[in-house]
Image 1 (tube, rainbow, N blue to C red):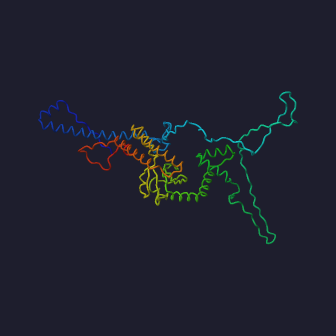
Image 2 (image 1 turned 45 degrees about the vertical axis):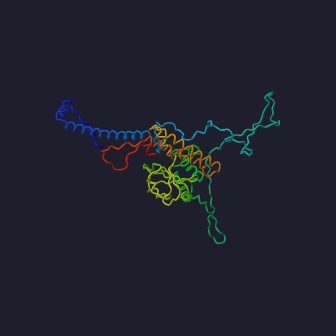
Image 3 (image 1 turned 30 degrees about the horizontal axis):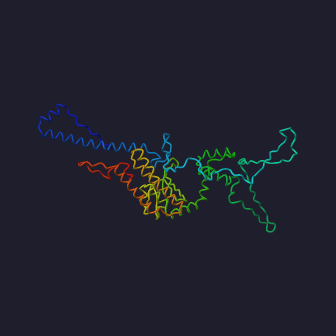
Length: 409
């Protein structure tokens, strides 16, 4: 509950003169009372200023300058601004780039011969005249799409020797009288999960392209079947990620049956493990079963729940770049741009070193980067001095409130 606003003391000229007429002590008491109220009002103004700045900052945060998802940007979002270092190269295809285009094939699926029937000069028939030359052009296209129906027939035979009846086995995937095959089910899963089409749109695509009316129940049954077949692979990915020396962790909200759930991810350069849970914090991380026994380097955004685990922790520079962008846009502090530039430069140097087959940067490079990093941190601290505490201000619980840029430092 907010405190009631302080009401300023209002005195008329006659009341002030009346106090003056009461002598020196009355005047001193009045001045002290006024100074005390000025101090209280100043404290209230400072608190409100911090509150206004915080609310303005929240209103100006988006997916480019914070950890907010793009879905929260709304229709007024600005065009994306890349945080990558400019290469100096012109846009478009580069010289010596291999590119991607159609290539002539020696083996084709079909040949259509276009014959000369008559002479363009005199009109004589040329149907029996051999061609002196043939010009060729190739067209790459897809065949007409249609549903192929295969009927499986299992024989039943009576043994002439013992009279026993034997039934041939159907393939394991053919379990019903009529059913969809694995290729069509695979297409359903691909459209739903890889192309992220809604279920209704997926059914519409199948109907438009193949003339197949698939129910949403078939979609979900196909997903469940695919999930069951991939369960062993999922467990293998989880185990390999848990043994990796460096793992990146993150979490984002998503809706499941109208409720807020959380999609947790743990990934390396070659593996990605997803885990869905109704909670965001440590309860979900325990159920995900990677961090509890992980002994490598965990890279994340600094969410407090990660700190409960004993592995080495590293903060994600992709999050730093977005937060630095916010400090630059909202607080107009140039040190944030300098830090962003330094982080992007370090990344570029690391990538160049990897491309050259090196395992680490040169010691001189590391020292130069560390010195520049410390210099920019000092600039940021200098740009965000903590306010001097009021001498008689009452003590407050918890840590003193810092300006948002100082929290990043």
